[in-house]
Length: 289
Ligand code: GUN
Image (cartoon, rainbow, N blue to C red; front, side, top):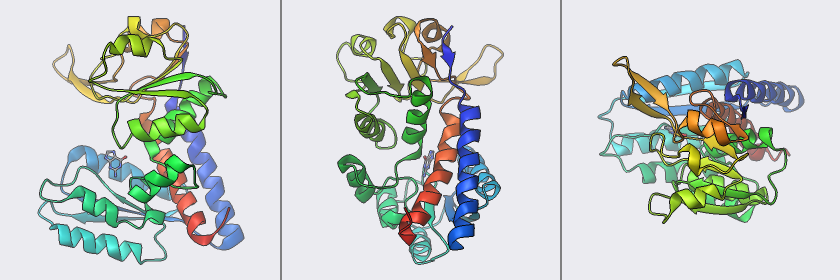
């Protein structure tokens, strides 16, 4: 049996740490970190995420604001809110929930967020800071994935890490983090030749490709650490839907040394890391180490 990496429990530990940091910041500097979330439209999954973010931000002792706009909001209206939040000293973190409606240029909106308040870590300035190793705000899902991998092996140094997926949100930033952990990093993707052979060389596999159960058991090196970032909704036998990852869990679990389940693996880590980033943003803005 592999080690099953319990993202739910580890996320709860991270949130406890954040709550302690918040209490300490309030006591030492009178600084209460605050996170503002902008939600445009009625996407049901986005509404659930935003509600959970708000509740967990408050539970950690921080200020939380939600700015809800209709799906018909113009880009100019969204940009005006972002600029107002940029200029508000009580707001330390800004997150614009994705996806945005099609008529809005998401890149322009994200690039308008003050990089020092960009708790998603998506702004080009933060992407650059991450790759050159400066203190920065790092995307949340990659941070959570590396925390989980380090629960299976406290040092990842020297491992062959294979990232499947090259998105700006997960694939590329997680590759930067693993390089910082002294892994030898391969970024593979849907066009990689002999993908299963590349994956088979991985001591640490990060699956973030968005294809349900693409990674099969015989792709996995015996004893490997498997971090499954995929969250795919597929039809299930009872006519409803179920969530599956990018790895076929039952097959991969037979071969892996450690594996994250879906759900209950990487998913819960994302908001926990967002809370951590909000504290980090507040500290960076005040010049606190
Ligand atoms: N929508 C789904 N995941 C994310 C995320 O990590 N950040 C933002 N801003 N929107 C999302």
